[in-house]
Image 1: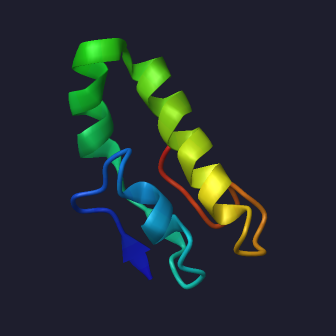
Image 2: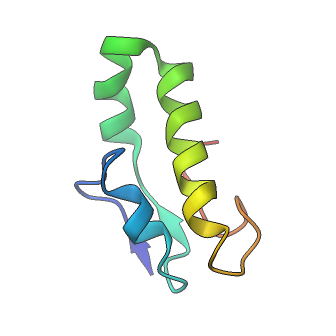
Length: 69
């Protein structure tokens, strides 16, 4: 399953915890957020939130969650 529409820093954790989700499409949010703090910072923050959420799912972080690489 793929997800992504409407994901933000505040909502990504709950969605990333769903084991069936294999891809998060978050580009639109990241580009918008980059206006305020830079693209690298936005990507790093989102990646950390996704990895933290996936740590409890049992899948290697980054393996099942795409989009912020």
